[in-house]
Image (tube, rainbow, N blue to C red; front, side):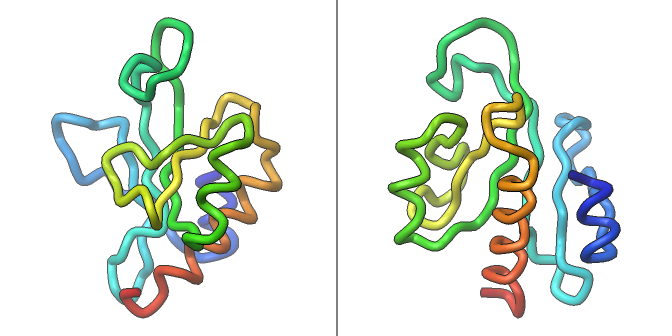
Length: 115
């Protein structure tokens, strides 16, 4: 995902929190606005079965698509973000890579210009 963002949007991950060194944001170059937040979160905090942690990405999504996507495997209400406009996507293989990239593209467009 980071290679995709670097190639397509010329953005590299930013690690803004010293106490969460493995959390990375992808930001617009001109506004510093996030278009993706990559985290490792415990399954328990996400309310999903299993033990341990899972990698996820939070992306901005059109409100009319959030509800239908959350009904599909691999999509959850946004973790620590506005649940109407943001979505958490599991990065455990349950969502195809190309679909994750399409969602990142949408998030990039939705967050352009500080929206």
